Amino acid sequence: MATLTVRNLDETIVRRLRVRAAEHGRSAEAEHREILRLSLLESDGNETERQQAAARLAEFRRRTAGRGSRSSAELLQESRTNRIETLAGRRDGA
Image 1 (tube, rainbow, N blue to C red):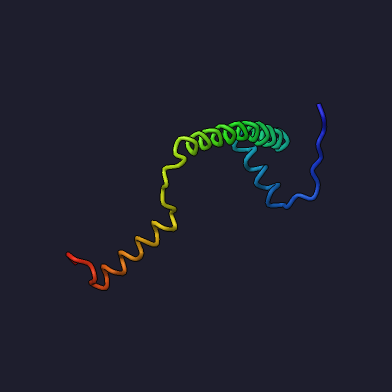
Image 2: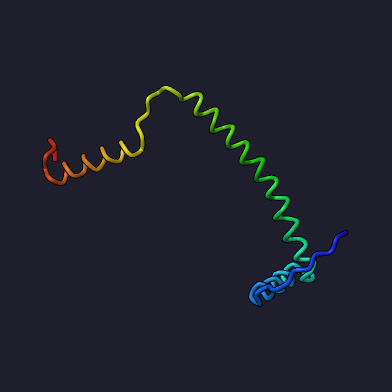
């Protein structure tokens, strides 16, 4: 196994590490190892999840291509215009 030395840590970080280690019944060094292990293993899993999400999004875009959906900016502008007309009393039934 390799050894890793971390220098110049803020005292707040060290204190929080010690508290977290005590909460989990581990030494600060063991807690540090666990934090590193989890963060690095989860980042690998997150990459796979991102790739899966990107693939699903690409499939959705392929299926909905050419439908001519209006942009959110257009929908928002229409909503604002309708609200202004309603508040100004320019629409029927107001």
